[in-house]
Image (cartoon, rainbow, N blue to C red; front, top):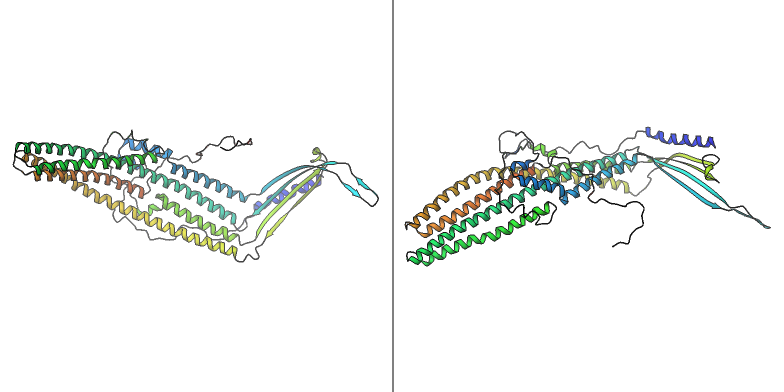
Length: 495
């Protein structure tokens, strides 16, 4: 018995020595994306030199404490970010699951059976006494990764994890940009509402002045009707802006993972449209390969697809496995390790693909086609990123020029409105001049507010295009739902 156990132990040792075998790898080795033409500089960059600095917490350049607080709350509670965190956890578990293929699997079993044997002949039947048979066994199997199929699968899983982590970062970039953009829009609508209300008050004053002149006999009904119509037209803008403001506030609530009206009280008090500090550090176009998460994720997916080709290719080669088992049986449980029958077996097994009607080769071709699709997606994502940055740079530059001109126009229209009103009161100017000046002033000031909103949103678009986002560590290990009572238990009736 002891010799049997010794031989079984030797067999197990021989099985474990397979760990020293070093396999080769098949399939293409990923060495980065194929060469692409990248511009050496931005054609519309705002300065002639590369700015120093980082994009970390770029939204703080908008200098709005409430916006900073809303972004932090959104990062903690947004459902899309929570989903991206769960995808990262899934990808990490997939790496662990795939990596288990490099190690042997060992299973054990035990049984107790009641037995009785009957031996029959022509003259009599002889029954043996009933007895119990105790059996125990351990089985082990190990598929050697001689051609690197498992290693390629692990490589693909790791690349998938890296892509999921970049997707999480991309979710944060999008979320932060959306919160900032809707916040800026909301402040813009508040400013436009205040302007419309302030202007309508002035226009109502002009209406009263016109009415006084009409009643005194120095005015006419046409001027009075025009004054009333212009004031009403300006007041009619207020409900439209209030509806748009409510929609932006509702969207902010959703982005924070709350009911739509949850941030209405925070936004009740008006505040100026955030004015960003310029410029942002744009870096070089090549920086987008790692700085922008959707580009980095697409590149990791390309690496993953390349590794899957090797895994499919390895399946076309023979598979070698080492198997071993040790079994023992005895009439009493206490004798299993002493006075028992011991059996063992160990040895390699080889599986050779002989004929599969081209199934494995087709699997390789599918993987190659999927790799090409991944490269096309990466290329398209990179080109879109370059376009986004260039567009944002042009928009920022041109909106800055536009804002200066609008500010100059508003200043002059303000002076023109003041002068025309004074002249009208003394009878030195026509009423048409007053209406035209007030209408032009309102239009110029409203356009100036919209320009400030556009400038801030262009700044936000540039930050997003460059991949700026959350830089602090993000906890991805905590599940959204904490399961309880997961051990053996009586199942309650489903509700």
